[in-house]
Length: 300
Image (cartoon, rainbow, N blue to C red; front, side, top):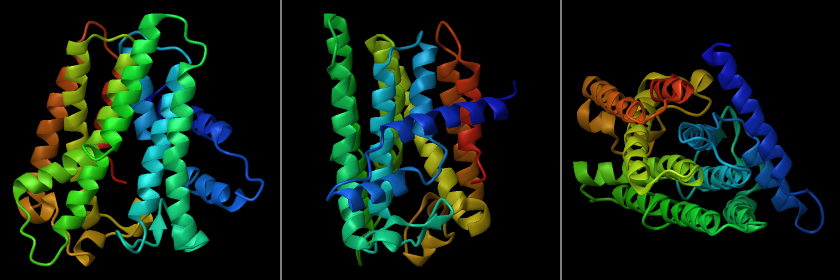
C-alpha cells in the first residue's frame, strides 16, 4: 500500500469515528446539532486526530481512550473554524469548498454551534476516565486533559486568536514577534496538543513529550506559513476557500512581511528539523514522517 492509499484509509477511519460520535439531530436542540454536524462533516484533512494517532503509534500505541481525545480535538478545531468564518472575525463565505456554517444556519446559530462543539469536546474527552482502574492511566488521562484545555485556551489557540484580532486594529504595529506569537498559538498549539496527547496516552516520558512539543511547534509554524503562501498563490477551486482573504482583511502575514522566497525557505528549515526529531526516537513511524512532509508542502 502506498502513502496516498494509507492516507485515504486513515482519513476514512477518522471520518467514521467522528460520524459515530456526533450528537443526534433531535429534540428542541435539533437545529444546533444539525449545524454542529454540518461543520464537523464538511471534509478536511483530519490532520490533528491523525497526528495524534500516529504519534501514539510512534511510542507503542494507546488504548481506546485515544479515540475520545481524537474526537475531542477535532471538535475544538471545528468550532474554531466556525467562529473564524463569522462576519465579526474573518467574514468568509466558503470553507472546504462549501458554504460556511453561518451562511447556511445564520450567525446566531453558528455561534451556538461553535459553543456547543467546544463543550462537546470536553464531554467526549471526560468519558476517557470511565472504567479506569490503574493509577498511571488516571495520570495519563488527566495529563492529556490538561494539554487539551491548555493548548485550546487563553494561553494557547484563543490567545493567538486574540493577538490576531488586535493585529487588525487601526494603528496597531505588528512586529515579527507578534506575528510569530499568532502563528505559534493560533495554529501550532492544536497540533502540539494532538501530538503531545498521542505521546502521553502511549506512555512516553516527559523528555520525549517535550521533544514532541518542539516537533509539533515546527510543524504548526511551517503549516501556517504554507497557508499564507497558498493564500497568495492558489485558487478557490484548488484550496476550497477564498484566496486573497488575508490581503482583503489587511492582515499582515509571514509572506507579506518576508516575501515568498524567504517564506518557502523557512518552511523547508522547519520541516527538516521536525523530521529529524521524529527520527531520533528508538522506533520510527515512516507514515508519520511522510504525513508531516505532505502536510507542510501541501497545495490545498
